[in-house]
Image (cartoon, rainbow, N blue to C red; front, side, top):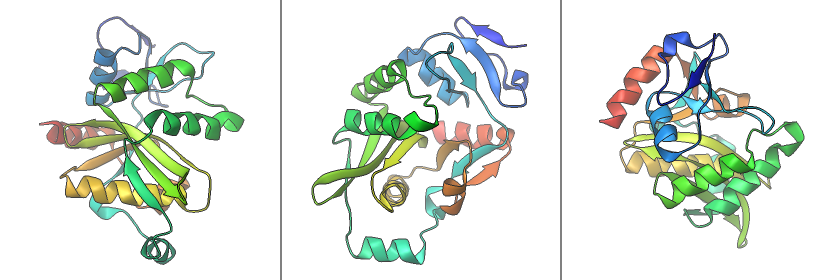
Length: 211
């Protein structure tokens, strides 16, 4: 049984096997922040109501444990890419949408509007990857406390998204961030050092990083 949201989320124990925990609500800043700090995130297509998830296991990446392959080290040493932060957030998130259109995007206009608002309010941030002054990759997510909640990334040339993730991990480690929430695992993330942990452990680590 799923729970229609009004002002708050149900206990995580009510999530179904896929992690779906609630349907409805809105994408206001208070609701989104409440969700992320509770280990929940929105994930749905434009033709669906707002769906909220808290999967078990949870995919995370500890900034100090990012895996940088020999090839990637060479790419970075050659200064193939340049990096900026929060330089063109809207361009990054729109490119993330384009990159998912052929596979069924969950990044609809309402999500773009909500996260752009969060960026203006200081919660959502972007990493931009440049090559010859052209934007070739990037990622965005939310920073709350010492936790970073990765949302999506895009790449227009080989290694751009990987380089962006390595840059993000280096930046976050320098700033004392403890964990990157990757939400759901995929081979790309696992190859970069991400791992799956039990949801209860994730919530414990998340709470510590939010203090």
